[in-house]
Length: 107
Image (cartoon, rainbow, N blue to C red; front, side):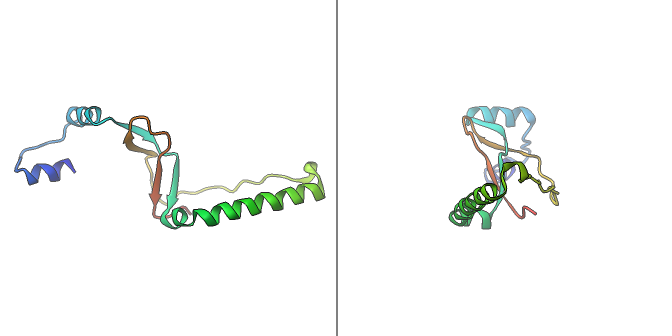
């Protein structure tokens, strides 16, 4: 972005040094933040369906626990595998609490 802007204003020898980037971020209230959630566009667009599905899952799980007892219900987490590399960080305005990143895929 900085390189493109330098071309537009005819600054042929512009280099966005670490010092320049640091000052730019400070002047514009930008900080590095940990990405708190990766989502796909489909996931973002179907949030209402997700909440309905989650409520249904909670209801069904409570029924299973009542039927079999909490001592006979076990949790089995799935293992996650990343097909794309993610740094896990992004640039956000200072004070931002959550950082979602729209991703090509989750699986």
